[in-house]
Length: 446
Image (cartoon, rainbow, N blue to C red; front, side, top):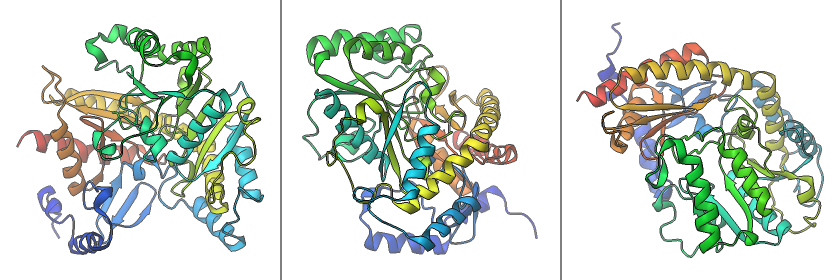
């Protein structure tokens, strides 16, 4: 039988069973989630997934950087099954269980060296950020929080107040948390405030110290600065090497805590356990979720022991945080990442960057490839002469890639993000990027 052409494959996706599932979904689920294309998953293994019509796809988004060990990794599946036969839940806020303690021991052992860490378990990234906000205010006695334009920290009221990536995420929810201000993230490719790439760090620090601190937010009232080591929803932006050491110095000067939001960038995704380690800086608090549980809902707020020592019992808590199933999955995830997947992210991520760089040289619409490990952004422009962001083009590449068998997501104004499972192979990179380049050429040659 002759192999189907790319156009024929596109017309087959989504198939009839997928279309029916989308229809049923619309009858019962609120539309607020806002799905990006009609992929209806039936099963997955590693970096491969199949929809309910039996069509195979390569997954280069990992459920938004969540399934770090790949879909249904046998070690994760077995760990969950074994734990489920013993017990599924006993509230960690009121009682003890070995799965929670064991994960706490493992998690603190893989934290950046140089200080003693303690953990509070939550169920998601937004809850981890909420815990970090509360701890920072509680420990310092201050109220002010500084976040960054382009940031995404979650959707609950506290974390939403820090989020500044898309206006529709905030629309209809004001007033938000008082005491929050935003500063500029140092984007070397698109320097904020009309500045130059060479001075982007100076300009962004000056804005904090000589605009915010001298007009609306006295530094003595600031509890914390929260920041993503690599900005995720804002466009997979990697800051200059000197940004974090200088930001750390600014925090130390004014007695401000530094919170690294590693919900998307942590747990080996960038080739190190934590992305902040690329910058040789110790934060006071790290938030984690997404890849921590390989798909099980878990988050963690990990902080300096000096901060948590005075966080009195009952000052914070939840019902499901630290539940046995999620903790067991997270423990096995950290073992896999430490043993092999962090190194694989470095090696295969480097290979993917090289391949994407070559694709960029053949395209007038790919302006920059940036990232670390398997956290890579590809920014689209209308043409390289102007470097004007092409939001519509990036969105069309994402949708058409799905129809060709590759699952991608966008971020920022016009960036395609590559955040595949950390089990990705070079052969899968070749297959996926072949589809990607074919899609880019098709979109821009119409």
